[in-house]
Length: 269
Ligand SMILES: Cc1cc2nc3c(=O)[nH]c(=O)nc-3n(C[C@H](O)[C@H](O)[C@H](O)COP(=O)(O)OP(=O)(O)OC[C@H]3O[C@@H](n4cnc5c(N)ncnc54)[C@H](O)[C@@H]3O)c2cc1C
Image (cartoon, rainbow, N blue to C red; front, side, top):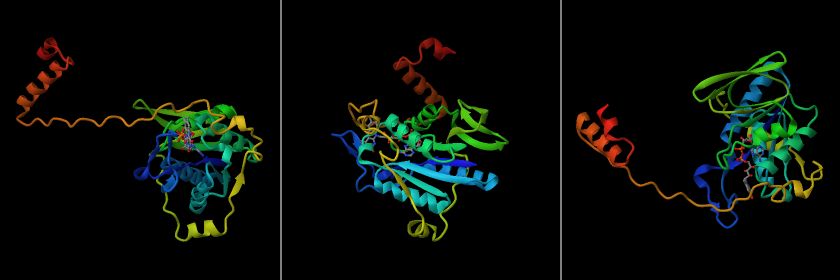
């Protein structure tokens, strides 16, 4: 089974800062990690390879520093890594990002049976990229998958939706976005990281390699613009009401009534 896993390098959440003029995340000098759900996608790909054979290729679009994330994924067990990088890719919104990723996937030979993405990232968190890649490539897609089984030419996948478990049988090639609970993530094998840095190759593709034009990528190829960025006002502190349950219930009902959430009729019921 030929599998492509899309991974994104994200800032380590506690160290994130914003550039309020450019309305973007400041990535310079910030420690970066592989998006946690992408780690799960990678693990799922490695498990499928173990059962069905095949090849796992990881791709990322990002600045040259994103190569570190690819090397980490190679150390975990991926077979091939491709970095999509070009100064013109900077400032891409999710549409422009998905377009570059889709174009790169089309160039991979043979065309993959399965493309795995995380359901969302911990930085921009839109959940757009997986579905947009699938749309651009004309592939079926299932989002938020937390179980995958292979049944001949199909995959049977499960996902949680509004408290129900959906079971979906999907033909290959397909794109899945994965979420927590799919599989535990393995520890990095001792020494593997060093080997991934010293002995493994990372392929690099730019605009020319992908036959892309300036107007299709980066700021120019983005359909959306961030107009304003603000921090939500801090939440006020809550009230702690103490006392026996009947007093607490009475107190709570009066508060809900004062807020017009309950009226006297509700209270009598
Ligand atoms: C208007 C606008 C302007 C922006 N400008 C900038 C900017 O100047 N600089 C900047 O750094 N960011 C910028 N961004 C953010 C950038 O567009 C997103 O980081 C990117 O499109 C991915 O979106 P996401 O994190 O919401 O991914 P999601 O859709 O939440 O990600 C889902 C999954 O898709 C895959 N994926 C997502 N991104 C990548 C990737 N790059 N490579 C491989 N796989 C991926 C991963 O598997 C991930 O788990 C901008 C966003 C917008 C809307």
